[in-house]
Length: 321
Image 1 (spheres, helix red, strand yellow):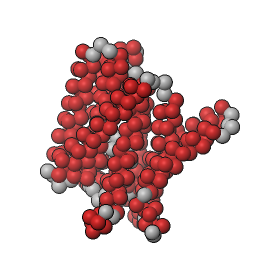
Image 2 (cartoon, helix red, strand yellow; image 1 turned 135 degrees about the horizontal axis):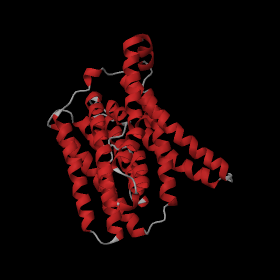
Image 3 (cartoon, rainbow, N blue to C red; image 1 turned 90 degrees about the vertical axis):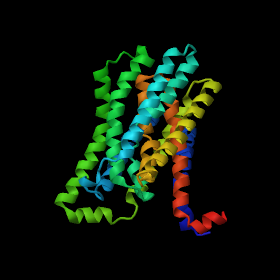
Image 4 (cartoon, helix red, strand yellow; image 1 turned 45 degrees about the vertical axis):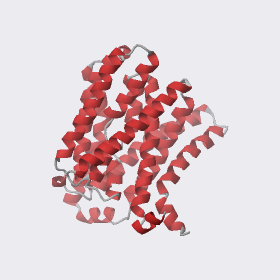
């Protein structure tokens, strides 16, 4: 087997395996609490830095006029907001504590906005990065409004009012959206030579995303290992996050196909900012709901790995397989 071809086809699964195994290796080492805290802080700093760089590289390749509004964007916003609202209403009728946590977790999977790194995957699969970037802005704004509105209803003990919650979310999300976008557009405008240099490096943004995905899986593994939750509730959150992942990728691709934009719409609806989901769960909802973000990290990356394999494998080979 061609080693280079193998690494290309299985780069994402390998990076995910590296992240999970890296966590267990670090956990088994006789490290002091100070060193462990330093490693955790380093990951918290490196992840947004990688996201910023990969988004900047992506925006260096597109023009502001490419970020057009499309019909599928409004359908998917309605779909995600509608199901999140329905789950919020169901939560008001639930009496069992585990059922309420399950409904919060599932609601969080629908409220969670598109991953900022989804642009990298969309470009890799040949989708429309501009339309995905426009949807990412819209859905993050929707999440910034709906999460503070729904959180007091499902978790009244949170103690945060709407405007404070709204500002916390905006402050955490939008710098990682607007900063790389403005810098990328500025480089295109004032330094075409630098823009050509940055875009001449094949798949640089994709490789940065592989490192970021590896770190995300390491963080997810830590959350899952340290979670104090009953096996039945853990299994229900796992199943709920898997179901929402399948539903959103399927809905995105079906809706996008009507507008000849299936790849972009599928990634927009299905690939989530799970780092934000984990933070929202631990900050605004029952802390156990952060497990949903952790599980979703696994599901959407597994699906992305399958998509990459299908995209990189010639159709004749796929049929023989």
